[in-house]
Image (tube, rainbow, N blue to C red; front, side, top):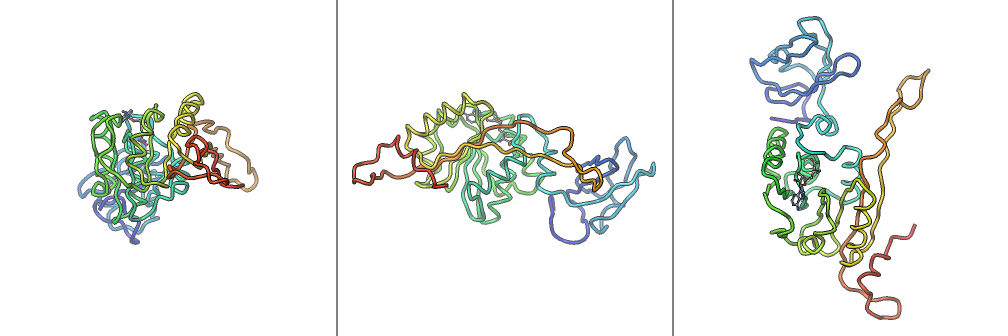
Length: 283
Ligand SMILES: C[S@@+](CC[C@H](N)C(=O)[O-])C[C@H]1O[C@@H](n2cnc3c(N)ncnc32)[C@H](O)[C@@H]1O
């Protein structure tokens, strides 16, 4: 067991979330004989194993906690990290925009800390597969460790390498790049991605986006979309309902595109690759 969304009661090995007062939360894996320790006191794991999800428990200092199943977003917010990670708000939109689903083969680079890898592995299910490239072995070790902890390691092949040298795979359904210079790797992307497949990338600054847009046009990618996901939380208080004081103003620009096979325009002339970029879905 690891991350377990099934069942009504906790089991040894489950990853659980303990939520204390003022939304302080902790994510731990239940192990017989182990103890959860925080400044709010100690709780024995043996006292948590076998409880119904949603139970309230108290530490030896009397501090109350609720025992719940963490969502994918909860896990990703708390993931051990050595790099910048993709955040749930962006990951959710990436998954739906790129049609990531059961049985697909998805490529990504770089693995970083494995936040996106975890979400991809969750989405492709047991029949699908994720291949994740990373140039820094230390980063990839942490990503691999995180995937093992969540219980998804068998859905992922990790490869250490610079994607400048290309991908070993071809005909994959979707490919996501979270590297600073994706514009340098579109030839490699086109060799690995099936025609019409889903390409996506995230970049923090506008000048990086401009470089990628130029390369996407040059390489004949169509249906290019650029957007940004803004998420605003509200105080869930019926008589003081209003936005929370703070919000994350910017994480990155999301860029999506599809490589297409050569085509022609209305008059039957060959469509210049650079004009394929103008093939955008009608509003
Ligand atoms: C921002 S992190 C990726 C974070 C990851 N998406 C996550 O959610 O945890 C970027 C990673 O790309 C790796 N990287 C940069 N250039 C690369 C390249 N040419 N080939 C492979 N990996 C690369 C970096 O070493 C770094 O670990």
